[in-house]
Image 1: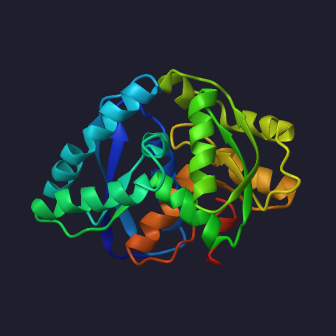
Image 2: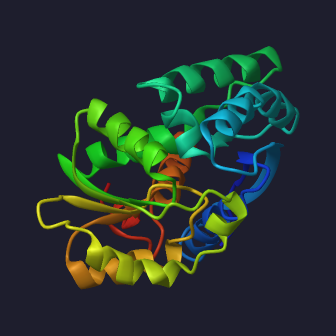
Length: 251
């Protein structure tokens, strides 16, 4: 098969080692069943510890990243730090997307902007969910901000687990299959959807389909939701094999 090549621009925390593995892995898997092809181009924002102070300073650098990626003429911009957005106030994903699109336009690009924060919120709506239970790697205060942000968007969070890992490299070094055991500590009985990783840095892709098949309800992650939004922004069918309900081709 041969198809159009799409350039995906990734705005990435400097210590993030997962966005550039999981999102390309999903889109490479898609290449086995669809003709479209993808290349990946990153610009980085400094951040090592997942604290409110470092997250705010990092987010301030995202304008520069958008300008740099505009130079590469990417087809979509994807901002990859959910908690950096959600810790800056309710609805900030809309503010961020509009601002970064403005920076891109100033540098000659009209490509759409997606954020992992907005993508995760949108994923719940796409799945028709009204409630979710989630797992996050953050310290408890930041996890509470994430929970409050999603609730403010109109969804019930029935339960959540904070793994309390402040070092971002350590977050990226977690075994994704360990989440299969963590989800058993999560009360998802009243949840429509399980968010296995509310963080693009915490690996979960290997466990998404396995956990979904075991618990019998939709399982998503920030990375899965971001991949869905990337494909929609590129006007491509949002389908990826073995990546959970959202990317099964039905939505």
